[in-house]
Each structure stands twice: as C-alpha cells, then as structure tokens.
Amino acid sequence: MRRLSAYVFRQRWLTAVLFGLFASAPVSAAEMIEERVETDQLAFSIEKVAGGLENPWSVAVLPDGRFLVSERSGQLNVIDADGGEPRALDGLPEVSQRGQGGLLDIALHPQFGDDDHDWIYFTWSEPAEGGSRSALSRVKWQGDQLGDVEHLFAQGRASSPGRHYGSRIAWLPDGTLLMSIGDRGNEPTRAQADDDHAGSTLRLTDTGDAPDDNPFVGDASTLDEIYTQGNRNIQGMVVRQDGEAWATEHGPRTGDELNRLMAGENYGWPEVSRGNDYATNEPIGETSKPGMVDPVYVFEGRFAPSGLAEVTSRAFGDWQGQLLAGGLSSEQLVRLHIEDNQVASHEIILDGEIGRIRDVHQGPDEAIYLLTDAANGGLYRLRPAD
Image 1 (tube, rainbow, N blue to C red):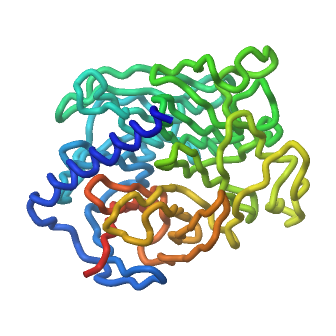
Image 2: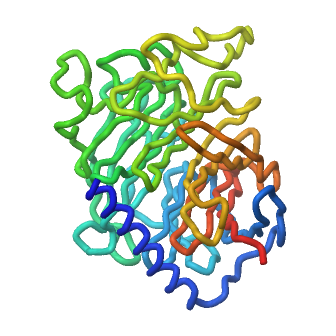
C-alpha cells in the first residue's frame, strides 16, 4: 500500500509542477477546431496542435512540454510545446511496415528526467525470418536527439501476417511494465497456447526481463513473461491511479471489449467471444466459459478501439477518474464511468469530428491529447471550455 501511495503522490506532484510550468508558457499557436462541444457533464474545446503526421500511433509528453509522436512508417518526431511542424529524429531501427506493422507505442520511463533514466520505450514490428515479431526496445534521450538503442524483448515466434501486433505499453506502480501482443491474425488459437507470447499481455522489468513474481514463473509449461492470456488484440491500455490495469481489445466483427487486466487470468479468445466471423457473420466461440474472464463492457457496433486514458486532470471536473476510449473505424471518443469494476455509464463525446482516433493521452498540462490515424494525421488537444 505504501508503494502505491508513493506512486500516486509522485504522479500528482509531477502534474502540479508541470502544470505550473505550462501555465506560464506562451499562448499556444494551435488551430481552434471547435470552441465548444457540449456533453452530459461538461463542455470542451478541440485544438489542432500539429498536422502532417503520417499514420501517427502514439504520443508522449517530455518534461519540457514538447511532444514525441511515433509514426507507423518508422519515424519518431518531436513537436514544440506550442505546436508547429514535426521534426524527425534519426536513430531508430528499421521496422517491418507490412499491413499494420511499424513503429507503434512509445512511453517514457517513470523516472524520466533524472538523466540516468532518460529512456524512451517503444514497441515495433521487428523484421524476422518467417515474417515479423512484436518487439520492445528503448532509446536514450539526449536533449534534442536520440542516443543508443537497447533491444529488450521480442516475442518468441515470428509470423507472416502483418497484423494484430498489440503493442501498447503501460507502467505499473512497482516500476514494471505491461506490453500487449495480439494473436497475430493468422492462428487465433495461439492466444490459448502457454508456450506462445501471441494473444497475451506480458509483464517485464524496465530491462525486458520477466519479474520473479510473474503469475506463471515456476510453471515449466508457460512462458515466464506472460501476465494474461486469451487477448485477441489490445490496442488501448492504461494503469489507473489506483494501480489497476485496464485495456480495450479488438473483437473480430463487433465484440470489442473493455477488460480489467488481472495477473494470471484468461480472457477467452478465441474460445470466448462477443463478436462474429468476418466471412459468415456467425458467432465465434461461446459468450462465456468457466475459468475465463468475461469482459467488463462490450462496445456497440464496430467501435475498433485504440488508445485508452484515465482522466486525472482536476480541470475536467466530473470526468476526473473516468476512462476515455478512442475508436478507429467508428471515429468515436467514448467516456466510460467505472464503479465497482463495472461501467456505470457511458457517453459518446466525439463522433467523427476529427477522424480515426489512434491514441488518447492525459497530458501533464491538464489537457487531453488525441492522435488521428491518417496519411495526414494530426495531434489534437481537448480543454474544458470557458
């Protein structure tokens, strides 16, 4: 409990400090898209901070207020705190760009800013014999450029379909990280295989090893890195301030899920699903099964989830503590109010205004940031309206 309390205190302290810095910064030159969008609980504005991004995938905010944005093509960009043109950074490995592959999630080390831990963690599709692998690496940040790259982890089996990489990263309070890996889209049953990383979330140290207290350490039949199994393709993941991990997961044809990730649990895919086969439109598997965790929530229609954040900003009032889930084909942003590990209420707060939402990020400046997945994608900012 003391460790969790220290984590929450550190996060709130950092938010307060950075908010003070941002408050005294020059007024942003961002383009106003909507001055006022009304919702059930509050009104907010939409600004476009930057454009010209080629299929951006993830955004992180540096301590000085600048943005790092990954592009699926393999490029990492830095954008000034007040917006403007992205500047490409050199030094990352060549990614496999087949299908959904490329440079994917990025996240800063929890102790970023003390020089020793100035690491940017990134997931990517690593070219390999037989196709590609979901991989995790980190690169040292050196002020305005990238330094040395360290490769930390790659899934044990490469495969040819360029899809279902998963690849979200989320830090737990104890300094370990969760990484999602999709079922890779060709053999769904891999998600139920104990000796395969596909279709799972992994728990790793900051150097890419399996912690000794992972749920399957000591079980010779199951890989040590596995934290949860039966996950089709998680592309939204967040660790809330209470230390709980939550994820949004692509179903097949409908059946997109919100789940609370718990160590050692099996979430069913493909034996359990709320979606249908793409070709026949017939249900896949059972709707529930003993020993497998039911989804907390199933999104309506073909939501196509990507990006998940908890609102921690006091500026957003009643939204504080709620989840925001982004949607790709739906082009929606959905607010989810969680009570007792259930969705007590939900609301669609964006519906096509900016396009396909790939990432959702709570910024340290009290604003919420969104990335849109397009050949000319953008970085957008939500702020409470006056």
